[in-house]
Amino acid sequence: MLYTDQLHDVDVPSNPPRCPGSSRGEMARDGGYYTENNMYSPPNTAWIWHKPPYHAVESDASWIEVIHRKDPFGDEHFGAWFLSAKGSGVWLHAGKSISFDEHDDAYSHFGVGHDNEAMSRAAAAQGFDTVIFLKHKDNTNYPCGKEKQVDAKYMNVEVVAVKLKGTYACGTKHGSPSKDVLRAGWHSKRCDCSNQYDDSNCGRVLRSVFPPWTPLPPRASQHDDVSHVRMHLNHTV
Image 1 (cartoon, rainbow, N blue to C red):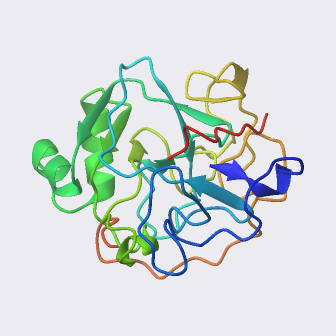
Image 2 (tube, rainbow, N blue to C red):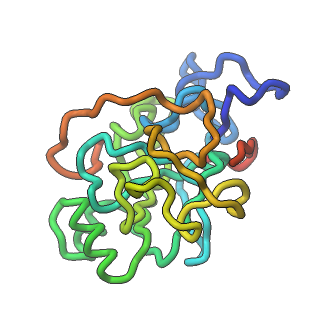
């Protein structure tokens, strides 16, 4: 993910398409520059397209660059849902993690119904810190996935921090969790996150940060169908 309002001296397209591929319907290619990876993409940001499949974290010691939007669906009182976002400058520690392809796989594994909060509680009770979804198909989260030129039903990796509360931008009522959970910079600095904003942040206010939000209507069940700035031009999802 790139903060376009910081790209003053970089030669990038001035009017990139919203979705991977071109506005003329040309098929998406790896390395393509576009603006909307997911419905939570902050304004004044852009992405570099890398088609799936995507991979799980390499070890429980891994740090993952992420974005998180303060719970828009009313189902993150237990667990905070993040998306992978290399270049965001906000790092989440994977801790003890477990990966699945789809939500139903996790519901079955933990013996819960189609209930995200119950899944987070069960995973936390078993000592996990994160649950990662590698192939969740969701046309609400990924509006561009419906476009013919994208040819991908999922466009990112979901990372659920099961011990945090997604009703807060920072995952906790009091702002930043411990340095062992969120970090800034090259995952070497404390993330001074502020719940004043609706998106995960590490204290440095960028023009890319969303204004105050209006909650979306509650959903029937799960997320289905539904500091410093760095630029990873070659490695962003």
